[in-house]
Image (tube, rainbow, N blue to C red; front, side, top):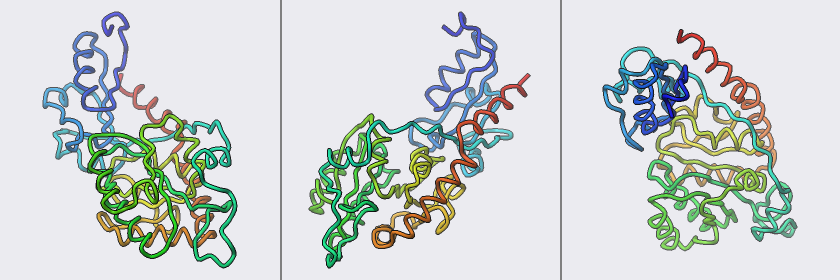
Length: 299
């Protein structure tokens, strides 16, 4: 296929694809570009020295990823092009999705100490991420157990699948939050709809490149609770675009979620600022213009 297409540029976005792209370069003499999304840090595979030498340009999806590129064998300069997104519209309304999930739209009684979502009803978070240790689902579950013990009524939609699924489900049962505070939805194709139904986004990762999930949540004006890992701090300034909490700290994570649950004005302020941040600095158009400049400069 490579030989028939005769491409001018072959661009790989993960270490496995780079292996085959290197073969493609040998067959076609095309220029080879690799974008590192931090998957080289033991998550998938580390490319060989031959594959690194075959690249004509290496891009980090964040400055943090670029700074750490030497540890995985990148020799020479690496440029930075931040991820950008093109927002996929939701197909259903917030009310329709919340009704499907069993979340009522009516607010709790005026005397109730329970926080409510912006349009009333249950305060709902969302964490769309593969079940991998780096995503720290265990930290979220322990935070949710702490919130339950403090009487803060929060439900988080946990969306995705992966090798850690059974262990994380088991921990949720052990903490007695499975199906209650933690709702496991498995792999879903309607994540844009689910984001629309949520009141906040959470991702307590132990490491990252520049997660598209964070950008997509911010673009939809969701307040985000995230950790200062990888390229996340390059997008989210704490207390301005979202709340940053330390890694592996369920108490701090619980406290940040509780702040959002009890402060609608804070949710609104962070959501609006996050939306503007992604719109102005992390659009798909801005990213593609930078890649186009890179391609044209390869000669």
